[in-house]
Structures are given as C-alpha cells and as structure tokens.
Length: 64
Image 1 (cartoon, rainbow, N blue to C red):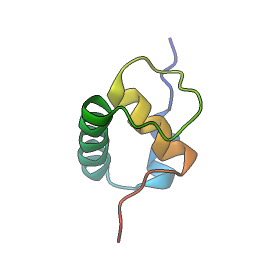
Image 2 (tube, one colour):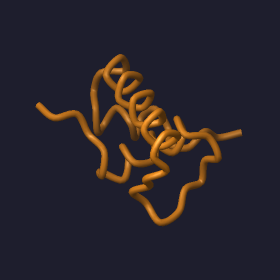
Image 3 (cartoon, rainbow, N blue to C red):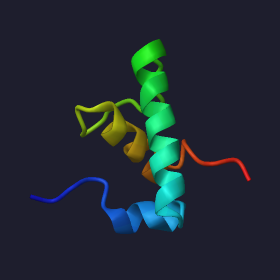
C-alpha cells in the first residue's frame, strides 16, 4: 500500500518533519472545527491526510 502524499514529496515542500507534524495537526483541527477546505478533491478521508495533501499542492505552508 502506497501512502499519499509520500514523505519525499512532503519534504520537498517543508524540509522539517517536525514542522510538517505541527502544520498538519493545526490544519486538521481547523478543518474539523470550521469545515473550510482549500482543495476541490482529496484522496484522504482523514483530516491529517487532507492537510498533508494541501501541503503537497502548495496551498498550505509555514510562514517564514
């Protein structure tokens, strides 16, 4: 079973695994609370997976 998005794709967008975890968890909570989605379709059923898909799509990132 392949996971989507892959860790390699994610690390191209955000090189720190720890930052990815924080970003995905905060965005997943926001999705659950407010039901605001940024993509038309998601492959994932779970909020954390959806948040990671947004990272790969380039619509979610950490402000520097």
